[in-house]
Amino acid sequence: MLAEERFSQILALLAEKRTATVQELCEALNVSESTIRRDLLELDRQGRVNKVHGGATLPSSQFRADEPTMEAKETLAVSQKNTIAKAAAALIQADDFVYLDAGSTTLAVARALLDTRGQDDITIKAALVREMQRLGRAYPDRGYGVRFGDWLYEDAPKPYNSYGNGSAMRVSPAAWLGGDMEEVLHLARLTAEVTHNHPEGIKGAQATAAAIYLARTGHSKADIKAYVEREFGYDLSRTCDKIRPTYHHVESCQETVPQAITAFLESTDFEDALRTAVSLGGDSDTLAAITGSIAEGFYGVPEDLKQECRQRLTPELTEILLAFQNND
Image (cartoon, rainbow, N blue to C red; front, side, top):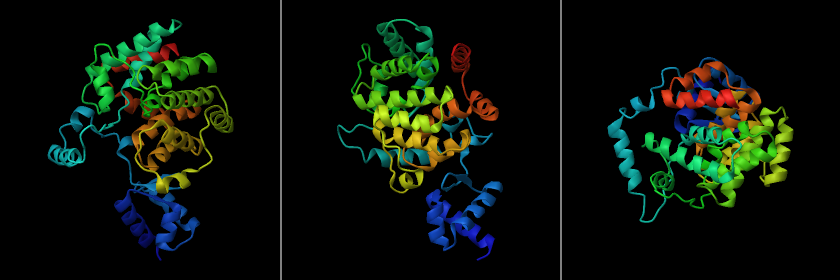
């Protein structure tokens, strides 16, 4: 089979599935692993696929310079979105909980921890609640989960025993402000407990924060893996190639945090970490947020990606980010 024929078949498979492992492509095309890897390298070079650890995905929009802002996106494909929304709504039964992910609370956590650095737990938690509610209300309709969305508008908000992965998604500021592991774990617990006070919700936040702290303080991937397995009991023995075929959309810490950490452990640089996390499927934005927060500590973030992200922040959010960077 000629190379261009293989390329066409690979692209056809990706058009159907959006992601494919090297093993899947070998079986589909009946060629060797080395041939598939060479083909993926060439297609990646041409910009026709994104090569990730163990396979490939279709080119992602998240690194395009011309990706529209959130405000612009809200005006795109409105009719199609309404059709999807109606179909999704028909699946929801009375008393169901619906989780829609978002990462906008991370900067609220950063602001609160900065403002209360060195103060007592009650003061820190009050600031966390205040800033999460303030920014959550200032930026509504950003895909918040149902329970968190209700919590944002409560006059006397209480934690709701969640073990969702939002606690791990927003915890990174604790890992950068903590002076040692003990302080990092303590701050991580506080950031989780204001909403996600279930033991698994707290554990997910602490494991993520610990991994970030170890990454940013010069520890090896082997050190990070050993610490997380020993202290939190997560199984990090499965590779991404083993996880990917059966992974599904799930929002719990216990079924997101280990997978996100594994994606970091198998990565070669910051962008590869994000691509590998997304390639797992499931709750991919949360996976990438958790993986990326660890990868930032280990690799740093490429300047072009920093600039692209900063362009999408409002002046208020930019001010919080800069204040945090100047004080960590």
